[in-house]
Image 1 (cartoon, rainbow, N blue to C red):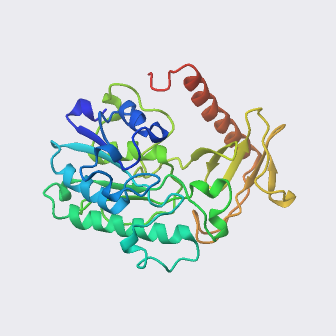
Image 2 (cartoon, rainbow, N blue to C red):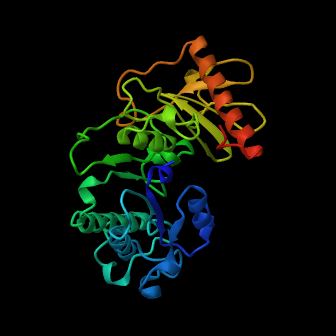
Length: 309
């Protein structure tokens, strides 16, 4: 959609080319040019021996390469050093030692790599006219209980950073999902969705809409999860659904074979304040929307029609 509007699209991931088919998926998603481990100019000097090129040098390469891309551009960058086995360059291992788990140290290294990327990028002429979107694909081994459940696997931040200052700083606790990223970018670019070559998929919406309908869906641990506010329904492929916790006081019936409940969240998570269980009609509505969400996705995927109008 952006390519048809004159954007140059490129994707960067320092992995071994072909790893998890990320290079093929990038091209399928509209990034005709991909840069991986084998496209990294210094060769294997910065190879971690496992996943690919360490984050810090690869992000420096990406920053330099972006300056050569014809504007306007859309660039995707996927880091890798914070993945198991959590390797850190030998010359920096003594710098990142404060974590109680190996993941903490590698994440601190990736944080350092991202910092260095922005220090390099802010010196580039394209920096102030670029919107940066920062998020994670999932969490990892952590000590905090709020990140250790199947549902919490996708409890990651979503950051929109505009160096020009047109997008004012703020913090939101509203529920969002990765499917909201592209509609949000189009919203900030002023693109009229009604004039797109094909309709937007119904999964995501701009996070900047004042009256957006907060929802999220994902698959984790062999379950499909659908969440609206603090209410979650989960169910496997056979159509049955169960509560997140075996706590009768937290379960709210919502139709035959389905149970829905209030998510037992910590105080510092999504929606601080008073929580209540949904009414019968509200609960049934959530279950019906969850069914519709999954039905649309499964039918389109099984017939290879996900991106068709």
